[in-house]
Length: 486
Image 1 (cartoon, helix red, strand yellow):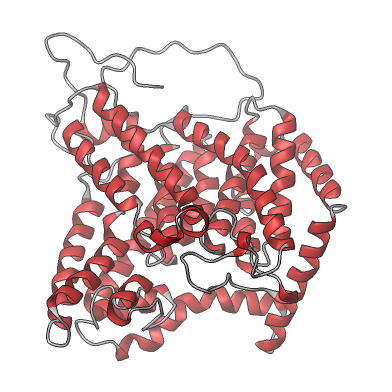
Image 2 (cartoon, helix red, strand yellow; image 1 turned 45 degrees about the vertical axis):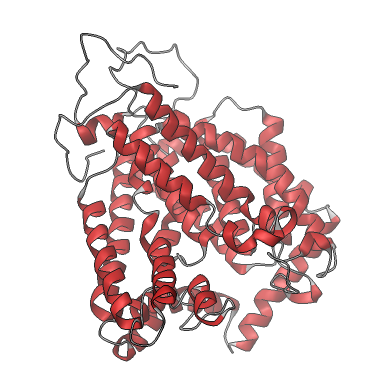
């Protein structure tokens, strides 16, 4: 993968220990992303508001260690988004100061800064310390985690909306978002259904890759996780979950077009998937969930006076067409960074609300104005398509994992709600893992594992991406840092 920019070859490297600490902190970031909803709902509801930003100190520590280890990314994307972030924060403060106390302005715009910009460099840092093997290890635990996640979702689906397992984050009387039939949309261990949608699509990505590349996983584990995935989709009550998983599955058509030889090895696993789907169709909770989900699609189409497909397409496109309608309505410098987020609204009014709009691009334009707002939207769009370009290049080399992860994370980066911490977290993680998955062998499509290829030991603990990003690290005093937690 060609880097965006190359840092000076004299970038400092302080050893294997710092790089390992960066990895451990990223693992902690991933773990908190999965459980922060459980902490906010069930374990520490009195701390629901502080836990909303529980990953922020972790990401700051990651950056500090990365700078010390010489692997903090310095490319055009990071530099340009830093400039946009600083200007957006300054203009946001200037826009709000005449109307609000300084402390309210700082907290509101500060939350907007962390929502829009703070976590984004992590996308480029992950491939600097991870390679494809690290990503597959994360994928393994994601596949395993789908089994208990589906059990929790099924229990939430069967329970009444006011049951403890269905409580919303915090100590208030709020409830989860409901679907048809008096059921809630099961959020699993996340605060809301948004996290479940991303987890379902991420699991789909790793399962499809495991099936296509014939990874040495036990069949019963893939079978159980696939069954759990289908159950999770069935009881989700969310059209978004169906669309997110369908988008990842659609990656198979791209693989078929570019690497048709890969699909010849997929037949047996496709048969296994059909058997799993047949078995799940007899699970009562799944049948009930699918019935309500079908009803949800139909009701939405009737409310919009269109077909199911037409309503679905209209919902997808509205996120990109609505901003055009409000572009002329946004103040030149915006209403202020963070005003449109739920966290910013809490500082301004004392409660969570959408003060501007729920649409992400519209929020950005109204907060930062047409100049800086469009600049940030263009940045997100350019990065999403740049990663897509790299994905296609890697697919031609036989790497299939990146395209599945790209299918799961593309829309989260392009138009996902960064004001919602879970959505922001998955946008960063999925695209960072997508880039890291490119640090692997040139093909993953071998029909059978061959003898391990002997390669020369790397002189530093950085990944292949980091070596290309920063240049080769010179050994100190003739000594090398050894292997790197591979």
